[in-house]
Length: 251
Ligand SMILES: [Zn+2]
Image (cartoon, rainbow, N blue to C red; front, side, top):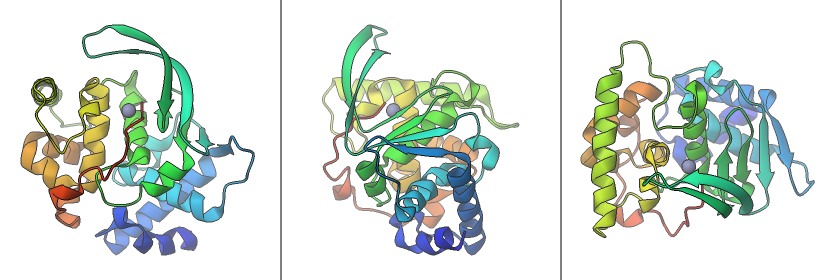
C-alpha cells in the first residue's frame, strides 16, 4: 500500500489529486493488484514497480466508482510489444471486417485486459494518450453488455441526454474526419461510438481542458459518470503537445 502511495507523485497523470484521493487511489490499485492475475507472455515475472504503474493507472477511472467497477474479469495479459490478433470488427458504416490487427491494447468482454507492457508503462505521462485508461474505459462500457459508448449510468443521470449529446458529437466528429479537418482528437475516435467514448475518456483524464473547450456537454457527462472533475485538478496543456507521435493501435 505504501509503495503505491509513494509512487503517485512520480506519475504526471496523477497530478493534482488530494491526499484523500491519493489514499483512495492507492487502495483501489491494491485491490487491482490483489484481484487480477498478471501474465507476461514472454514468461518473465512482472516487476513490482511495473505492477504499481499499471495498477495506479487502471484504478484512476474507478477512483469515484469504487472497487466494484473492477469486478467481472480477472486476467491482465502483458505483451512485450505491440501484438497481433485475428479479429472481426464493424466499421462505422456497419460493414463487417475480418483479419489480423496489430494492437497495443484490447479489452475483451468478460475476458482479459490485454496490453503492450512498454506502452502501458509509457502511458502515465500527461499527453492525451493512455492505453490503460482507454482499455479500462472499454471495460467500464462493457459492464452492461457489449461496448457501445454508453456505460451503465448512475441514478439521476439522464440517459436520453447522454445518448443525444454523444451521438451528435460523434456524428460531427465523423464529418470532420471525412472532410479532412485537423483536430487534437485522433481520427481513431471515429471508428465507432465505443472508440469515441474510450478516446474521449483518455482526454478526460489527461487533457480535460481541450475536451471541455470543444465538447463541453461530453465533459459534463464524463465528469458525472467518472465522478471526477479532472479539469479542476490538471494543468492546461498546450495543443502542440497533442498525441506526441503515438500510433494508435487499440481496440
Ligand atoms: Zn478501443
